[in-house]
Image (cartoon, rainbow, N blue to C red):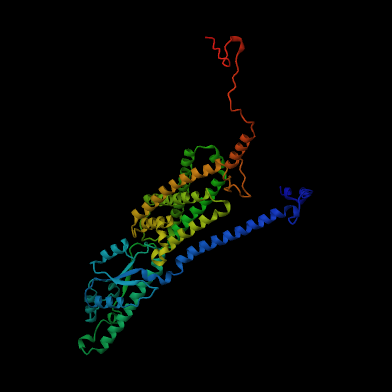
Length: 481
């Protein structure tokens, strides 16, 4: 089998070939060198475009954290609530930490939890009765639970990376600082008092007056969550790109022989079928691997969850497939990677970062299919930050717009094929790589004009020929009447 690659079988095959330095192909070598330099320049543009898009969205993330607001909610109304609120609001504001604000509109811990799950990033709650419990312990009560003083409420399901890097750490760090500061103040006050009734307090409450518990109202902090939807959609997108390139390279006979209306229907249907199949595999993969890495506190994974996961992935893949195929139909081969890079990088960035932590330019991430699909998946799995209407609306609008644009692209591509403007691979007439069996329309027009000019001229008059046997003549005027 491997003998077919033996040099012995190639003996004499090189006799008619020339060296790459031969003068006879010097012009071709010069053209190839120029083309490769152009490719190097295009590759440079592509890599800088991709890296600039990504690093431009994350390099200032640590100095834009104060665009995120977290809240202090005093449900105690006593000394503990007042002192804790003052300490929290006096926390130094730095660009790398969220900003603390106070919320006066919520009147229960459950209301704060619902608010954080729906629209907030996080909150520190001074629980009702914290002052009364501490005063009772300082008066000598045996039992005191310092952790009942404060509740830290977070929602990792809103945006996993931002919550874990900034919100959760800000809540925990601030609560710990407040606990230490409160204990120091209380011990100092105790040492300065002369009231003998205060000499036998609950020392646990004296040394550790306030503590906290953390509640995640929409837990998504399981192992796979920060990258689960990102890499799921990325795998689908990369799989689609290969198919789209194959379709572009092999669709020339269709554009040359099939009706436009059939083509305008065929490609969206094929893309929808491809999106359904690939997103189905993604949903199966998540179902298979969610077991040990899926947070036990997350919402129950049901049959309906699977179908929601599947069809969300379908919408994301379909919109991206339509978008890229619009580009691929018209771009020449050396440029086909550019829209892929400029599509992949912003979409990935939209799921691993958040708008509050990026420059204003990156508000365009609201339109990214990855972002809208990931937001829907996080809501489906955790119930956090419901923006279903906006996410579904953006995906549907993109699908409709890209389908309309693809219809126009197919029409333009078919015209270019039928008129010999571009060939099967996308090279345009005039390129050294252009090769099409359909003649260029301007050449056809020029040939027709040349043939018309080469024909003998026609006489301008009308030649009259009489039939002599009937005695009727148009020439003499004898009409036989």
